Image (cartoon, rainbow, N blue to C red; front, top):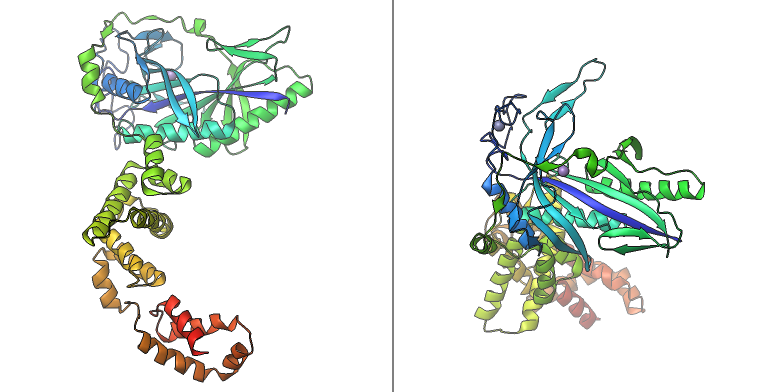
Length: 500
Ligand code: ZN
Ligand code: MN
């Protein structure tokens, strides 16, 4: 392709503090009627004074430190002026030139994506436009709730990478327990700036895209209304195609804001883009500048936990998990913790057997990962449940894997026992006995059964003797069914070969 794709992201995430950003209203308006969850401050009455929520600031700093960002030791809030019905004061309290966090970064697919800034601001109310009516409704319950805005440098190179960034960022917000970041609920909203430039005709320097020679840069276009990860990818890909098409057909592209229409799978022009001058930013006079001292940061640092990208690398190295398995297992903190508990049970079990082989431990860890992802997830996905809902303790889960590993049950019996554990919890050893699923390893007993199977099927026996090796599978199948699936299949195959 003769073009370079240039993408920058702006992501807003609602913080789950108890209170709103600048007043004492509840930050969780669930179950409240429209406009019930408001006060004179978040409704913007004249003469009221905002007071910043220090928990929200602390969380912004926590995120900033987790993303290896720099912190402005002296920060402040600013007014961003614009007129829209869902903004009661006629301005939004946001941050302009001194955001809490700048120069951060996040690793996605092995590439460090630079983050320009992370700042705090307040959310707006919500407009609804009832179909067929000549009026609109405004609900201010959301007005004044804390929002964290993250802005990346324009260095993302594909729609896929943009999506991955959003997903990883969501995991981090959830790991730090500062936002639910559910895109479908609007708790996390992604906007993408997309432009297409001809190769070798531009450079990226000091955070800016500049034209080389007499090349004229193509404008960047902002895409809003993206409300799922899938839509992030679809909207950006659509925009890339549309822009290249326009360039090749000599149509003029303008700097504008477009909205993603999820039903029609297209972007549509919303308005010609404002520049920051249009917002007439100035310092918020009602909130003094905020000093962030070293001791506060030190205290916040103690709350930083291992985040998904690091955890994934560790899982691969320490537990011998595949890249895909590790990515799934670290995607949710609770799941990652559960996995580690299961694995540590298994390791302890190997140690207690006096069997200190590192290789066995790694083999078991891998088995644990596979059982979690393929077997357990089948149940969870079917019932639309999460790992938090399950009745199986990590200890029992580990024991199930140990039973399979020791050959006390075969894997199909393991699946049956897991289904039972998933339903009612319980100890897999007991369930195995109750269901009579213990694997038959007794050679003499198996030999008796197999002799009977061979006697019952003289035609197949003849075929096998005449060299038709595929009949072996038939005999194994017959033996398994006459032992109700309990025979050790490896042993069965060995005995059949021996008998012929
Ligand atoms: Zn309020
Ligand atoms: Mn914003």
